[in-house]
Length: 406
Image (tube, rainbow, N blue to C red):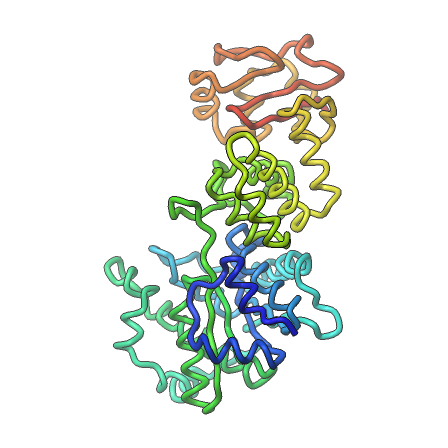
């Protein structure tokens, strides 16, 4: 069994660990059962979760057993970590639907067959808890003074932290305890914003059960300026193809900053590190080859090789002088809109969210139809604009759409 700790360090995952030397030895000699929690507050994971999925996948490939814990119970409260406002509360039906979608996405990187990985939902043990028993049994092990020093709470104290949310750390700690008893889970992994919650669970097991337990966090996905990656003009970079198309997903990685390429290759692909370093060392125009590799590999992992090839082909057609436009993202309008104003068409097809945004796009010279830059906000599409049944719309410098009439 290879020591996954060395792999994780070399690729840049590890941010903080609770017992480094002990954990190194354990990874060398034991098959570790560990867990990572996923918050089912949406029906898709986004790119911020992808690094946790890769973290988990490397552990599984090294022979260790993952538990993917979806927070069907804790989602009814909401994790205050990294949040300045209280989260919207979801219904049980919404949460159950989100969980089913998340499992499908996790299965792209994690093998759940034959007990190689486990999916658990903390609603199974949290929703039927007797509150008085829980506070007597679990709450007694938590110091309020210590909890208030945790970063996830400190930043909320000024705006107000409800007791409702204050319970979250106890519940996440209890999750670790339950998984420890049920599956022999001895380790919790997560993003670095979960450090306080991870320590709380680890200490709960050590105090209550007298057993060894450990925690490890991975770096959050940030660019060279320390800002979170995965934000687009339309919001988060989702893993669901219906929320972020494979083409847009590919283009995001194709256009990352030069200084972020090597880090993204190390964290978000399974390429050998020798190849990662070779690609990351490319300079000037040659770095674009590394970006193409990054975009293809990440898109392949999330959307499959076929969709990655389609996205690559479309990008080459638009930017590399290729001719195959069939994979450029397609939008459509009904025949009755054929002579409508361009601003109405842009809003109808969700190319822009509003007429105000469409007007601003045109005024700034950011809209091109075919080969013609649009300067008049009252412009309409003409029959002559359609070539072979479609018209190419260019938004800004890098967004392309093929418009057809249904």
